[in-house]
Image 1 (cartoon, rainbow, N blue to C red):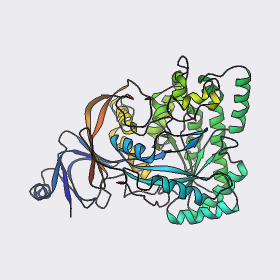
Image 2 (cartoon, one colour):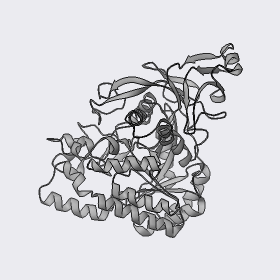
Image 3 (cartoon, rainbow, N blue to C red):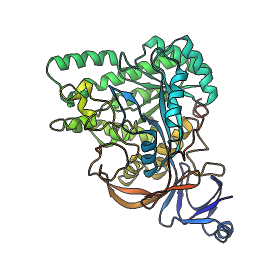
Image 4 (cartoon, rainbow, N blue to C red):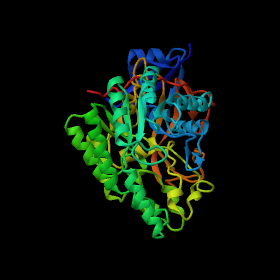
Length: 468
């Protein structure tokens, strides 16, 4: 039996903040005891290895419910492998990711899941799970959904964007949602009107508007809100739960708010890039804006107030990263002279916990809401709670000793993601993970990486725990 005692810290979960010591045995949290209590003194006098958290927070490991490691897109692959990407996540205090297994058109959903399982097997530094992307909705793939839900793949993503690649029409979406209503699966939606966007892309290129900034101009906020509205109505018809990914625009937030006011099982996610970056980054001179090409796109600054408000009111429930990095040299530059060929995606898996803590420092959210958005709610949303996302007896000992006063400057020179630029280059933030445990094992400590590829395990998931 291995025993570890984390003592002296302020334990923060989504439910409470308490000065307590945490006892870990064989990879699980077994008990918490108030500072100075008889139990805490007994533990301190025992044979446990002690991690001193004095002056620090003790928080659950982050759960990032939206990553894309080794994802094929635009003739290339996202630059982080499951090995490099999960290692970077660990450095930033994230101890579980849920990635996306892609069904290719004409192939089975199972083959996509098997392919992504093989990519991740023996490579991950932290625990991992999978959603499935449905690119070919038909009777066969609908039947596969039932089997996969039983096996722990309990959410399926569809796209209203990218015609000819991932796009599903309204009829296919409705059929998949109906299946989800029957088998308990959560439908995840990339909500942009891809058919209309393609018209605007064609027109922009014909007029010589080829720079990266035009990526944001053609992917209009109204086309995000229209698709969000349509997805909600389809989900209502199907009686299915809906989770809208990477919400970026105030108009889309308004659609989610209306649906939630009706008591519908509709949820929204946003990402740090929409909270801290703006369309001005897309408009940087030369080709620099290509670094910030992602979909949905960055928006004008006024949208951020809507996103922060929605995070406080729970009209947006989760902050994930949509981590999908492409190097500036050799990948993003595939779109030089044609913004539509720039691979869509940005790096972020390493910095989510710190950027959200910066939001605490700046007064956008409170400490427990930080943990709710980054740990507890994604764990509940994707059927991982209470194994993940909290600090309680029986939970996996995925724990972070977090220094709330550490100052750092985000930079490509110091990050651990396998990408040649930082979307937040030069940004100063306060707060940093000092010690990170994955199932009780210390994998990051005081600037040293102590883990290895294969430390992480695949975690089957139950269904969404928020459904009413």
